[in-house]
Image 1 (tube, one colour):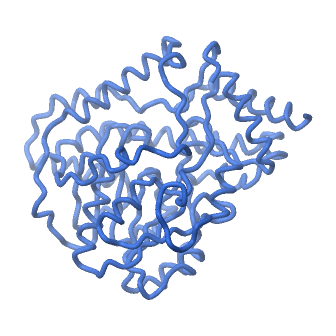
Image 2 (cartoon, helix red, strand yellow):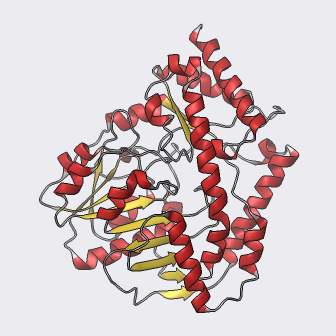
Image 3 (tube, one colour):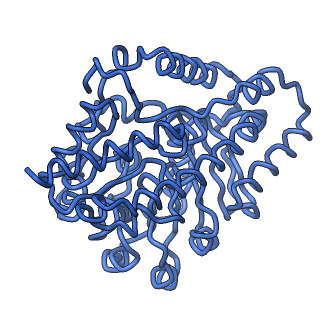
Length: 402
């Protein structure tokens, strides 16, 4: 990032409705009222409303761990199929619980595996499949996989998929559990997560954690981030981070072993923030379609129908190039012009996880090499979005002629 750049567009601007935070901090509702807030929130998601089991957690990773811990007690510790492009927390917690992790390569056009790829990976030891959208992108056709599940458990990890509605209705209907995550950068930006499950089970050893400290820490971070952006000091304080770099393994394990559920008053905060997020996603969808019509993007980029799709969530806007060398040049140009973007993708499994079988994932590697992620379009001002479009088109045009 060129820190001298005056026209700064940060990679992510948090969802920050101060009135929602104040309402939650001042809340003194009864448990009956909390139940109403929970029902309202699940209705807002338009997913999983009729699932009998609903638990709120301080973090989404704790919700995921809670379900797989239950699953480990009810089935043999067989294989769990997951995407090769997934947050490394997931395979580590599966391994911790005794499951064998089997990574499935990405689809050639999507950053996630297709139904056909999961089908090919199923064997007699497969006990569960976890489907996880990346940056808010996911295939539409899942029926062949759903017809094959039988006793195989299906888990939807929507840490980066909050905002999908009818697009994944069939998946939700077939799922045994759905996990949501609301941490900073996930759209809702409050902290916390939710586990909804079809099977009735109890978290007998889990205590209710009523401390608001974790959430208020996120509020402080969001306020500080907004202030740095507003004052123009952001590039001097925020270190350029790249998710493709190997992460600290201690950080990966952080807190997911915590056996505590959140107090139901947290639904007050989530209800206050979700309307903003839905509006932001709708704005991002319209802008993604507009990006896909730009002449230089149409000329230089691939899989435009995927990443400029009006039905995707676009938590980060992905631009995928036909030429991986052009991607690097455009990425550097955008950074120099004050647009904070990063290479797309999670670490490749062989770079952080010990495996005895498949050791390379060519589609996932190609996705990482050819893709960059732009800021969340839904939270850019009109001036910022127009600046991004012009700068992106100019950068592509410049380097196409190199």
